[in-house]
Image 1: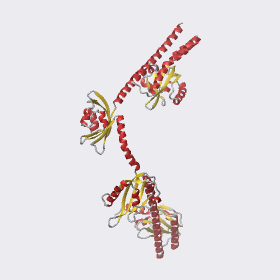
Image 2: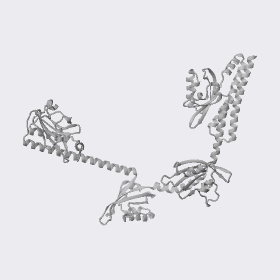
Image 3: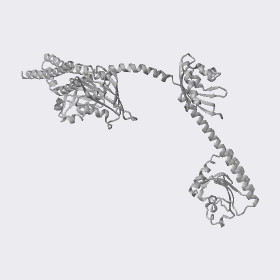
Image 4: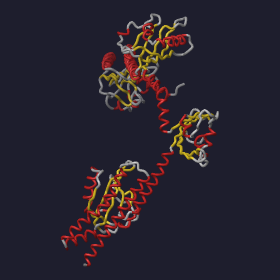
Length: 628
């Protein structure tokens, strides 16, 4: 038995199904309200729906009210007991309503008669109410007439509900049809309908388009006309699949075959179908299905055969082999390239898992076995190890493993000979180490910064000594921190120009600031350094404060010495230009041999030494001049 709460929820659900009232229906309700007013000779008539929180008036004759709270209405009593109409001859004499706001105030109700609107599900939808401002009663004829009007109101409700339900059904049908059409369109498939009694076949436009025809050009459409366009090598199989389906051997008709396109080419079709009507003898009467153009897939499948041949060639070039291991059966498949990596002379001889692992370097055997065979290792993993050929030749191999999530006993993967890469890697690491050492050994203060953020990312010992910072402090600086305030604008102008000319080797004279705040003159040489997809600049900052001071003194003493000073300033730049040129070669990512790397490193070191000697020579010459 339903609780009162559940009963009310069911009633509200029923009320909501009648909520959509058209203007034409409202006019009908207004007419019925006026008839009720005339029949009972009352000034006010209300037709309402009892909502969850309010009484909604769908017609209000003689009063200006659209809705009132449910707890303030007379009709709330009818929801508790609707077996009879609620008739109140004088509200001032009725304890239930004597203090009601609509009795003591507007519209001053004295007489009230409410007739419940009860639908076929025995739910009270609302009421038909007649109201007067004075005490009175209704005659039997008036009560009978109001019951008739209640039936009329309910009929309008039902007609309106059926009309709304029909519109909703039409809308849903339209949406469903459009959805089906969109699915057909998005799936790029054709449809067909086969009437087996008449033999006629009906296609949609997509099926015709797949074959290059219009629908009219495919008429008359029968099974025989369709088979006549089918490749002769595919007809027997198609007929067999259809027969097996009609005999119940398979649940659906499915077949792939070739159909002649209008342009003469062959189109591969995937045909699926199912009978939807059968006669009393179990013979099919009506069948529906789809046509899908699978030509691209078929062509791709054929190309795959050729691709496998090319793949073997590519694997040979990349020194990449494929393996497949069944741990349960302890069997393995090796591609030809694996035999070449392990240098097995005769692949036809026995070469199993034990033979392969026996040639792995003793220090790597446990790691490799764990990576490939242990359950706890990731489903997909890569690893590197060494193999030993003929007890002395070492090869580096990169292995990969992919463990099937459906069958953990089946392992697939690759082995690739990376010996040459490893040698190159060792050479690069060594080269990188030499470059780093040389950078730190240079007597010229140098650093590397990020052109976008201006943050310093590397610094040498000479810069730490000259500028007075620790390494940690220097790497927390930007270029702005090395300039006095009055030089910041000039710095940003140079940075903007550099971003537009990142390839340029730049030289310029600037003021720099040490940690202790002292200011000095520098000649800055910079060039690009492109690494790790970021744009950096390498900088060499030559302290020219003393040199510039001496040169100015010399220039003031003798015009002949001015020429010497000019020549010396150019001589200073020569070794720096050579170093920046070598940096440019490094940026070009040229594959250099170990010997070439050694030559370039020596050139950088010689240039740095040459620069140091030139600076010392200038200082000595100037000192001698001053003494003279």
